[in-house]
Length: 376
Image 1 (cartoon, rainbow, N blue to C red):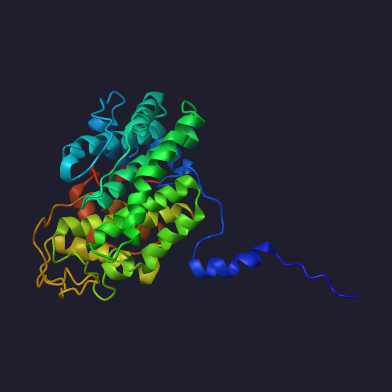
Image 2: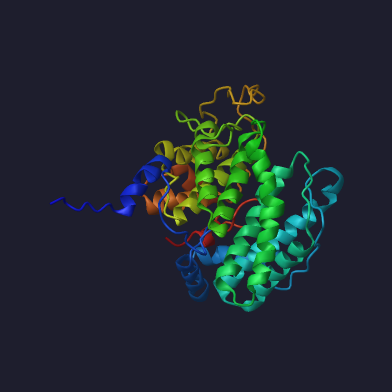
């Protein structure tokens, strides 16, 4: 008598899981950067005024873009950071920041006025916006502003009963029809930018993958983080030997922008059960510590002229002092993972956190890290 062999479906999936490093699981919603459990804890922080997170929350609450009474500048049919429509840059950035921050305020205060304001902004643009022109900065626009839109849309879709399925579909069409094609064009092009661009577009591409429940997009974002032919992946942006950043010779603002984007990608993946933080022996941690050390005033960090993969940015012979000591709010999220979750030491990053105090707003980062990343 022949034995019946039962093949578990999970075993059939093992080669795919091992090849991609991506968990075979459903997406967590909401889950771009925060799960419902995270939001429940942040609500508790607000109600019980738990410090130091509460002081960071107050900075969020007092930001004009976080107000439920925020007055939109737009919407605009065409938006751009440069070129003919560059006049829309600050106006639309502020509108999208308002959608993002009001979505957060809705989740941490449970005040419906914030959800309504976030929804109104997204729907106004969904009904109007048609074009991001193919200017030089188009990928940056799609990445920096697209992230805010996707984050807010994800929150509203899964938590706010005041938005209809038809309205969600409108917002989704804007994301897939206006923003994602710009990112896909960037991915398809021969590498031509400094590394912060790749991180910025990928944090939005991964967020959109989560929002859309699209596993192929999600795998593509993870693949970019690990191995893309671009300055913006983890192995090309941060030196495994020293932690030096591809843009360290350019200026400190862009170096922080780049590692902040990579950290955001890692946190997004973490919420979905995937550990990108540990890639290449925790190389992101090494890069953050390098940037922190130099920006705290240490003149003895190692530096070598960087040979980037485009061949365009290899002329910086010394580390740049431009923007040195101007800390942007990227440090708490990374510190929270490596130190509080994992038990590593990040002494230079801790010095910055102690020096700056509760993190506040930055237009191009998740920001308010002392509050937003206070949970587990």
